[in-house]
Image (cartoon, helix red, strand yellow):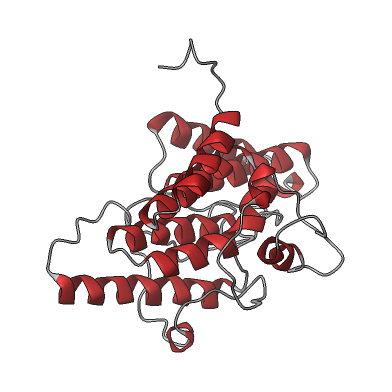
Length: 251
């Protein structure tokens, strides 16, 4: 972390003794932020105690697809996440049927159970990554109604974090945080968007791949709205590194 910017170094120290790999975008200067632990985010603290608001699509039974940390292996799956394609759902149901046919042999270390749990975790991450229902809201109810709606989303996010017992290292929480950033940008709450993106940075970097693409896209958009155009351009160069196409092949 010694070669990184001050703010990036702060993020890398979120887990003592373990730094998180960053790509070239770490040379950029984030807005200075006070140190916040990995499991803390800049949402209303009192909202964590209010669990009345929750996603209508959240299941009420444990599952590797929802609620559990990515590394947990649960022996049964009782629900599938909303948003998967029919083929994805069919595959998950087939895996669950196969595990069910094992009966008492369906122990956590059984190869088929392990395979099912890995596929379940991958699909859970897919749903979290593609989540954008908050971003897609129109926010055309006027300033007052928009403020109330953003506050409701913040409370919902904080409530989810409080119930889950895990922070942004959990894929579902991370996907919701990035979705909230989209809502912030639509309402020009750029400081809040910047703060959440900074908290997400080490967890996105650890996952890499398409997560990094989504994060870089959000950060570059915030930088452009902040009139920090050179930094936005640098982010776009970083984003280009994740493209599987060269300049002639890209659509």
